[in-house]
Image (cartoon, rainbow, N blue to C red; front, side, top):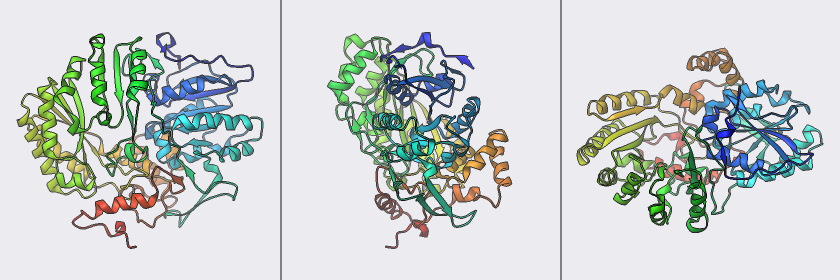
Length: 547
């Protein structure tokens, strides 16, 4: 490992001076510095921790670190991508910390984790962590540190039991999971005694001051970018979408009191601005924000925009982006089939998609990137034909506009209405169908790996039994073949890949995350599921409500 390029960092906050008895804490991102420092979530959590005088915070990445304490009391990980678990295990080993929480003693730091992956379903990683923070850092971080301070000098069991009383803090070792059989479904998830809460509820920040960059550096993956969170969550509630369902309700940053002052501060140190959010252009005052950014003093500012809702792509938006050095815009369409979009609750028509392309070209943009998906619940072969037809129509309606269709395989996510569906085993052939029929039309088609989507589904739907599999996979080299080899070695000891990935799960089945309450109760997710299933020609019987 090397030292971090700290001289290139321009801080937008003032770190506290640590007091004499400050808690030594390591905050890690399980990837390279250039990736981690580009994560707005990591930046904000680090700044929140580093602003407390009762903490002495050091950052750690896979390729570098700040000066690390010899005896850290707390070790935290921000996890944004499922497959980074391998790096977490490697970093634990590099620090001399046992991989499994049950093997740690009072001589080892308390290991906590947060971020979207661990908030959605921490169970595959439960044996590697002492504590999970479920939800928004604005609420959880200070509550966690304050609670730890109260039991700082107590034994480990007392610390964990005390932390488990804080809303949103999940201590997995204090819950027993039993199974119908070694290869069967979960039979029960229960706290080890009556002093431990039966369920842990994700914590939601409801303010209108959202996150902004706390550091700008040319070493970030997005060089010298200042990021501003314009909205949080998404009001559309597409039934597969973790970014919407897990993070509800939809929240907007106050434009005049929050966004404009934040942007003004950030643009004092850089001229590159990133507007972030799952549905940025659905901010009710987005036009006001555009007018603000179109002021002459910001003429040299480069603006990058997260994926936008298709029917909000106007000629004015396109012209603003072109003025600020953007040549492309990204829209999520999922499918060319109106019928399939209705099933997934994507409130969008093919005509609106075509019009977005026309507006993009009229505003001077040179390319449009579309995101699609195959294997969505209810998908039939005719839906793929309609996707090909839609792309042809788009190309014809906006000649000269460069079109790219990125396409992934549907992966079920916890706390969404589609969490009960498995991955469609025909998805790989459907990706190949689109590739054959679109590339011949001169359309750039970029499929994501089907096989890695299967692994992503395994981790997004997995339970605690996967910890042994994950250790074995890492031991065998962390390749696709390593997963197959590990499943083969554990045959009879854990469920097979089919169970975790491809099976539709019964509505009566206890889910690995059943004791973790997301933004919406299970009954509401079931109602939203039934709204989709009612549109199927032949609904899967295990997913049809009987009550």
